[in-house]
Length: 266
Image 1 (tube, rainbow, N blue to C red):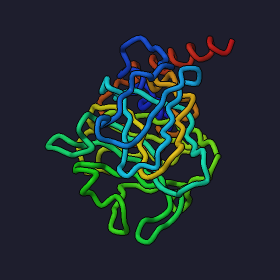
Image 2: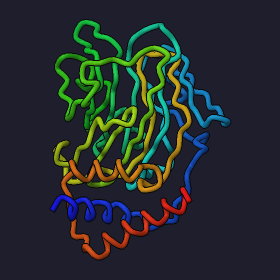
Image 3: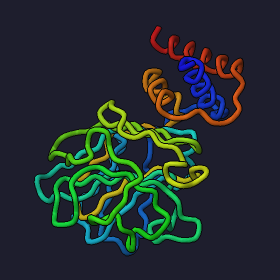
């Protein structure tokens, strides 16, 4: 039964990706939310396809993909803090749209926030939130915050200075999966966030009151192009299968995926 569910999940993932895959290795067109008023300083390096945020900001800052399309896609790369100064927030946004930082009627995205050390009511560790209100007025920062899910390995563990952490994030209308250093940290469904489906929107980078944050070696593509077979199988084992995907089509899609990856390594 588990094999059947895994096949259905993989087939659903693959069949939802009808466009020809093309790995994106240039994210120079990403934009800074409220660029005219923020004190953040984001700079892009084309050789490594990386973004660097150098300022200990007085306000939270978000850099995001202006295409607004992340459903059915994955993003991979590395994140690190290149200083011993400060101990604040780094992370990602998923399903983010312009203006979501301020909040609005249609706001609904996911925020992964990772703090290095505890400061009073601001607690150490990695948390995942579903954001429907302004980040300014939210309870993300403080002991009253209620994450929808906690990290498997970093719930009470902060990031280390000058340490590079790999990340893989896969996002669809029916699930979100986040790997850090090749270990699955989050695997959630819309039901975990109290919604029927996850919104279309962008991948993005986020930090608050933390300087010298590097997001490097970024690749951005369809889920089946970036995640390994082992990762897809692991996600399938922990995320409930939803939707009516025929077994024959699912197995056909999975077989095509296997042949493609076998050809890559031949």
